[in-house]
Amino acid sequence: MTYIQAAILGIVQGLAEFLPISSSGHLALLQYFFGVEADSVLLFTVMMHVGTLVSVFIIYRKDIWALILELIDTIKDLCTGKGPRINSSPMRRMGFMIIVATIPTALIGLLFEDFFESLYASIVSIAIGLIFTGIILFVAERMGKSDKGPMEMKWRHAIFIGIMQGIAICPGVSRSGSTLFGSLISGLKREFAVEFVFLISIPSILGSVVLEMPKALAEGMDASMAGPLIVGVILAALSGIFAIKAMIKVVSNKRLIGFTIYVWIVAACVLGYSLLTA
Image (cartoon, rainbow, N blue to C red; front, side, top):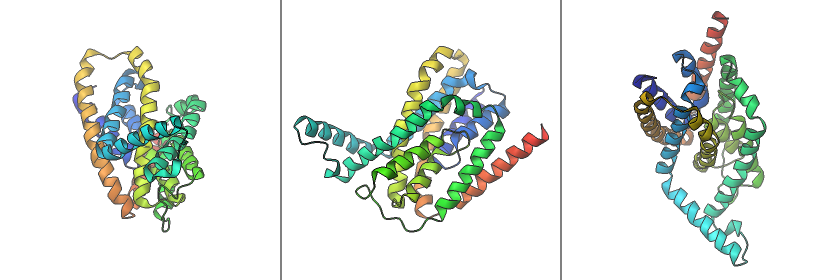
C-alpha cells in the first residue's frame, strides 16, 4: 500500500464513519478498486477505527468524562444500597441508555457475523446497502418536531436504536445514518440525537477493535506498511473530527438530502459497473 492510498483510505474512513455515507462500504469499494486484499490490510483497517475513535473522544471529551464520573457514582450508590438511581441525572440516564443500545448491536454482530462477512464478497451488496442508507436518510429528513431529551427517552427507544446500529454492520449501510434514523424516529431532539449517535459509537467501534485486533496481529503486517499506517490513522482522526462537527450542523439544519442523493449516485455507479463487468 502506498502513502497516497493510505491517506485516501484514512480520510475516507474518518469522513464516512461519521457522515451518513457508510465507511464500511466506501473502504470496501476503495480496496476493491485499489486491488488491495482485505486480509492483507486487516491491521490497517483496525487501526483506522482506532483513529476515528480518537476523534470521538476529542470532540465529546467533556461528556465522556461526565459519564465516567456518573459510572463511579452509580457503583458507589449500588455499594451503599441506594440502587442504580437511573433517573438521578440526565447524564446518568443517558449512560444507561448507551448500555441498553449496545446490547442488541453486540448480539446482532455476534449472531450474524458470518452473514455480514459474506456480503463483502460482492460490490452489489454494498450498492444495496447504500440504497437502503439513502432511504432511511430520506425518511429521517422529513421527521417532524422532536423534543425528547435523556430524561424522556425510553428503554424501547434505546433498543430500537441499538438494532439499527446492528443492521449497519452490513456493508454500505451507514452506522451514523441508521442510528440517527432510529433516534429521530424515536422522537429524540436533533441535538441530543446527534450526541447519542456519536456516543454509542464508542462501545461499537471499541468492541470491533477488540474482536478484530487478535486476528489482525496474527495476520501481521509488512514493515513497509508502518509509515502508511501512521499517516492513515492520523488522517482518519483529523477527518473524523471535521465530520463530527459537520454532522452536528447538518442534522440541526435538516440538510440530510445531500447525503441521500450522494449515496444513491454511488450505488447507481457501482451497479452500473457491476453490470458492465459481469
